[in-house]
Length: 163
Picture 1: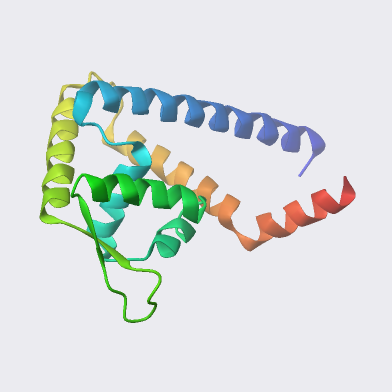
Picture 2 (picture 1 turned 90 degrees about the vertical axis):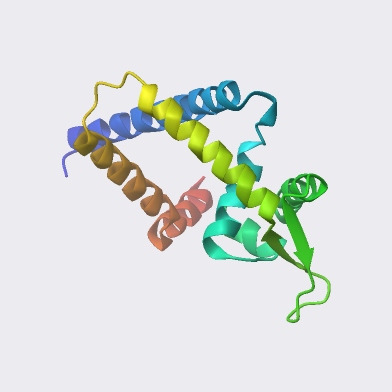
């Protein structure tokens, strides 16, 4: 690849990152507007979705699946537990790390949120085709996968050694 092509790709990647950050913050604000005082933090909501999709997990397992610390994940689990949205059950595999599971109230809360969000999306004036949205999601998925890949982690190690 020519140097000009590489620099063009670097510039385009920075644009993707910038727009992704902007969308992340704007989407978070939109969700807070939509749910009002019933809005759990984004990380807490992600925990509910994960537990509903994948079943009971320990706090360390939940944290490893995302780039967050165990302590950070613990704060979300504590908050959800205090609201009765998750339960902590004995873990036969590890006495000190209980299994966290979504409760019936947590399932209902998550379904209510998703229903409200679908209603909001239906009313969103978005002049973008389904195909374009799928393409955008695919591009973002591929960028994320590249940043999670062993080759990225090896490159980071080399850059750190060189600096």
